[in-house]
Image (cartoon, rainbow, N blue to C red):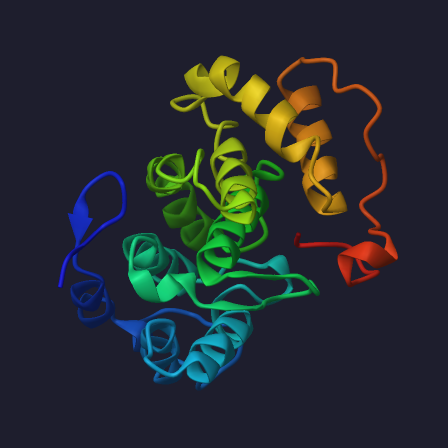
Amino acid sequence: MAINNGSEAIDPWALLLEADWSSVDHCRPNTAPATPVVLAGLLDDDEDVQRTALRDLGQLVTHGNSIYGATAPAARFIIAILGHSRTMTLGVYFHEERRRPMRAALLQWLGDLAFDATYDEDGPGEPDDVAPVRAILPLIYEAARSYLFDADLLIREAAVHAAATTLVVPELAVHIPEFVPLVRSTLSTSEYRGNRYLAKRCLVTWGVEPGPLPDSLISGPEDGYSDDPPF
């Protein structure tokens, strides 16, 4: 079944079958056979399987903020499933304590990935692994745009997060003026400290006065973790 992610209809199952998972590097050796199973689990009928799949995703393709050969094809699958009704499963995901739809967590994951891939000139990984991730930043941007005004606040915040972090690349920088007010109204006012930090970073990078926002990457106890993000 093709799922409309906001830009074009893509068959996520075809993406799973097309990818040669055994030929690309993962976070840990001998985990390639598990990757398509974990990704498929994100849409499982069992909510516990879904939550476990999202937890395991980071252990397979992006552990420690590093990018691997398996990262880009996994991200393409996640982009393709964002519009699926199963991504609305509520849960506590990643380092947070708040319950939110898995769609918000997946958008956050894509935003963190875009942040990692563009944080510096080289990126956190081998050039041949980082380049395919940078190549799909326009796909992340287009997918996130569909949720910028979502009825769910946490999905809106995650969508602005995901889209805004892609705007460092020249072909997307043209959208910065329209995102300045979105970042101010959505991320700058967020109850989540990680979003407020991201707002400041984006605005400073774009040459916009950020106002009094937190300087530190270290989150307070209200965010459910004390180590540096990913957010």
